[in-house]
Amino acid sequence: MEHLHCALTYGQPKKKALISGVAQTDPQKSKFTDYSHETKVVANPALRYLWLVLGFAFTGLGFLGYILPGLPGTVFILIATYFFARSSPRFYNWLMNNRLFGQLIRDWRAGMGIPMRAKITAVTVIAITIGISAYTIPYPVLKLIVVLCGVGVSIYLLTRRTKII
Image (cartoon, rainbow, N blue to C red; front, side):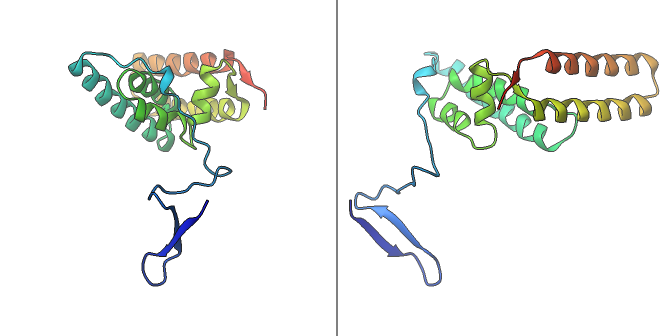
């Protein structure tokens, strides 16, 4: 197939495009899989809009969770996946094919478990965060609640199936 080569401006690299104007992608670098058949978009437009907004909200919380210690990113991304599967095949596909966490979502849904590295990282961050929080919180009841939540999440993570790489 012939490609149309054109320089966009002086000094910028050439962009390859098909004659039809659709951008060409290298199949080795970009492996997009269409997961639209897995979605069950709700018929009610108001509910679909609500699910879409919740999907974006939980995606934002998921991104923050990967940046901020103590905030679980993967859980929020899994919840966002649920909402996008009921509101938008486009954004559902975007999450499922995302290079950062798409594989984690696909593995979780396939029952393959959580990678050992992710478990160790999560439990370590939880232990450090809970330890600092328990040390700085002045109220004994709140300390107990924080510690129990941290222990509960850690037990949950450690008892999930471990992905064998």
